[in-house]
Image (cartoon, rainbow, N blue to C red; front, side, top):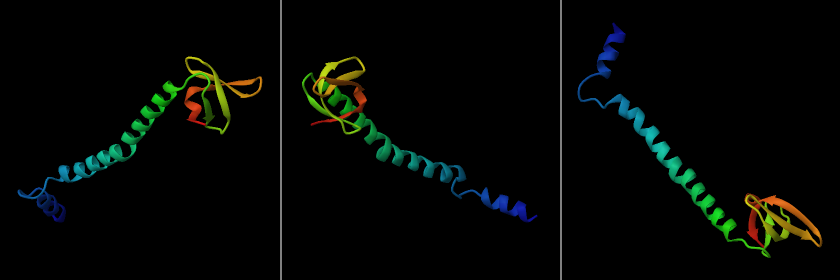
Length: 100
């Protein structure tokens, strides 16, 4: 009988909807994650893509591994950079982090 009275108490008119009280905190958490994690990452990726597209032959760049070099050739997905006299390497465009 005790369980029946608990179930009846939860379903009384005028009490807040238990589904809304469960869904609203999850919705708030999703919105917060989007605003503070996903949106800034998307902006950063867009900014990096624009930076990569602005690079030209002759620019001195720094790779994500700390290698300095001068762009000698631009491919579809990679750059050829000269890191020393007559020493060139190919590196993916996403691994360029800044101009030197």
